[in-house]
Image (cartoon, rainbow, N blue to C red; front, side, top):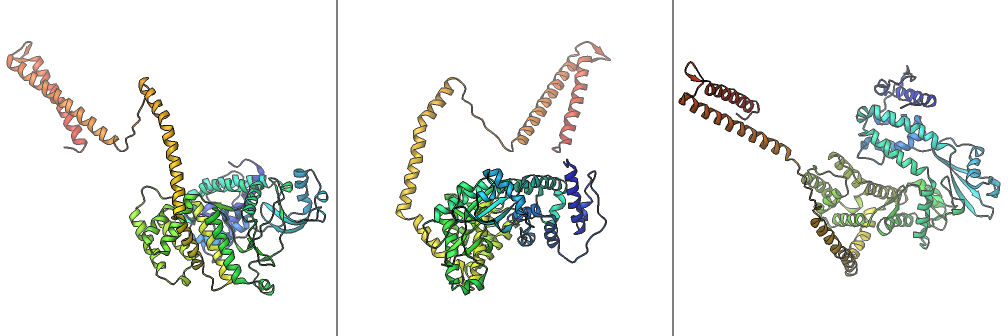
Length: 547
């Protein structure tokens, strides 16, 4: 699995960091030629989860991104570990602009001074890319996100090592709160490959821009398609204040209470109206312009839901606000990846009790984040998880609720979301909406009816040709079939033995020659054979536990 000297060198670095932070049980399982076991270890009083976080920080950017993905998977990682992983920051030492310039030459066949009027100014550096502010030759101020040179090869090296570690330590890592390491590495590989393709981020930005371009409450950066590729994304620069900079917002006379309300409303609209939402609305990804418009930035992580998922979400929230905890619990179950062997009644009962505890609390005391965490804990108890889309959605709401609380200590997300849900629920059951669904249903029914004659004709043709087949699959009948077969065999043997025994008796009474000591030889042989078969049959029944 470890193919190159470079990989061995990197693996030695990883082993040293693991051992230093107290993961010697993992290190002892390493049996790869060329890998050296270190001799010293750090002694500290950190918890296991804290040591994991510290180790990941030392392992570097790829592992940090992997851990950030882990923090969104409560079905596979313990909540205690998730809370530690959420603290990880993807900040790395930036590359010099001279190392970045060849990417522009490769993508546009131009030098930097042929694209930008002034030198690029570094804004941020992350594990896979760097972000700059620049001015195009036409005078437009832009933000440019550039993929680091050869980062795909670097990540591929770390992915190979991650796969090796996951396959070797899958059982031990379960003791550290990671339930399926190899499955997580496979998911991470898929996610990181998407992140390495900036075309996806450009598409997300363009879609988001078209949805909100006419909304006066929000400012969305414009995409510069001519300067955007799979390795570079160029968008409009928007001057604003980070939403977490409370002092600057106050000094700029920006109404923080209004911003808290508008920001939350905008995310709700993304979810409930457009079914396409920002999946990572943390304070670093939200700016406020000096004319009080909300700006979402970084469109690399977006979530989307289907119409049916949206309906289920609205129903769940409606049932909670209407104090129908049992229906709400069933809605929650339908948002999870539950298996057929789950005890549904027990789950619904436990979830109903949990929801009920919130229903009879004051709205001002209820937080989406608290409900979300309690739901996750209960769901984990049943070894199931939220479907990914729902998890991202709830996490986004909980994150922006936290921002709202910072901006306005009296902000209450539940009070703000209740009228939105009630309005949407009424719209879904309005005569117009019902008529629209019936119209769509009638279209589907017409499609079925339209195709029925052709399907029926095909079936008749197969019947005429003798090619029509019906496949039946029986489940759990193998043992019954085996038992019946054994019983039939035993009965058959028993009848044969009885027949031979009766026949032999008749031969003995008739004195049919040849005779030995006056006893018919054939009759005697029949008696011996019958006794022998009878003993075998009795032993078989006894051994089967049915005597």
